[in-house]
Length: 241
Image 1 (tube, rainbow, N blue to C red):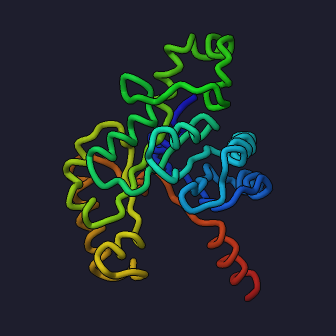
Image 2: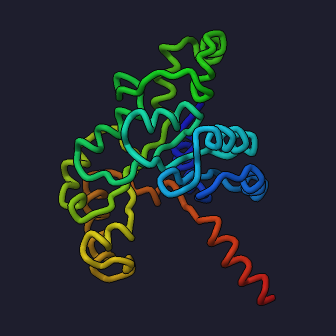
């Protein structure tokens, strides 16, 4: 069990993936066949429940895909529910302060790097000690491997968060940072205008701060499209041909 996203980065490759807002095992299999590296389940705005997340992880893994999720909340019980299903990467939305960043890390990584709670779901091999012993050398070694394998992204979505970036970046354990351009635009009284110069300038400023601190942006690791973009843009191209 390795951090597949970081493995690709070490080979100077960017993981290619698709974000889904509804469960569809068939779509997941097709994405795997098409050569995608990962899928991201949008648990904040999508129509996922624990059973569908479980199913999407099973099918995704079977199709050779790394399965990530944006969670609806950074509360530990919410994140733990996703990790227990088998999710290998968490995007925490609405990170506003260092307290939020620490809460995100604590929920994702086991002690001593965090405070993740142990569960008996498929994400932890159903707490089958024989598997944990044979495959990882015991539970105590497994928790360290699991902590290393999780890919954590913090989503910065308001001007308030950008003003708190120095404090947020002081928290260890976050692999990459990303923005929520639409919510960011709304936070500076420009609803529905993520392309506005003021919004773009804020993201540029924040990116410079992040990089100057030696931290990474999500785009350093991942390239993502949405299924709707694939269908709509692909259909336009196809129908014109």
